[in-house]
Amino acid sequence: MVSLIESILFVASKPLTIQKIAKALGADNSKVEEVLLILEQKYTDTSGIHISRVGDSVQMVTNPDNTDVVEKFVKNEVQGELTKAQLETLTVVAYRGPITRPELEEIRGVNCAVILRNLMIRGLVDEHETKDSVLPVYELSMDALRFLGVRDVIELPDYQSFQQHESLDQEQHD
Image 1 (tube, rainbow, N blue to C red):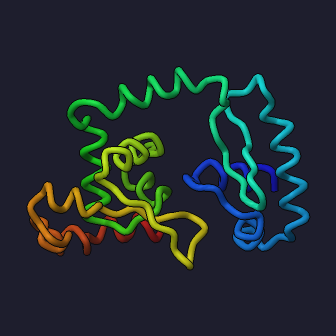
Image 2 (cartoon, rainbow, N blue to C red):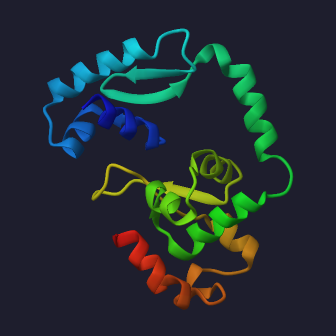
């Protein structure tokens, strides 16, 4: 259960309630609380990761002592032109969105957490909660659509053929 909750917290980009985690795992709130205590002990002051709790919400965050370095890294990552990896991620989000991070990573074959965060900071991708999933979904923002000169993703070139591409559908269902 420790590994499961740790993974959920890692992929969630927003704080999650104890109840939401428990529901996703089919577990009791008390069991989730026990595991969170284990994770809080695992991620001590010497770790780069911490478990942050506010009320009934919990989130995996970076160590506050590392704020200056993290902010410098993020600033460098979001300035300038989009990288090839960012463009690829943006394209997948545009043509396959709304999409969860694990679905996106399955298509791209690499971790997309930092790239998604950078695209959100730039205002190109929006993150939304869904009732059906613990994980948020990502889709193109209105600013990105406006920048591309379209009102809706269906106006993107070859949108229908990419939206219904057999190999991508098969990948996501295997």
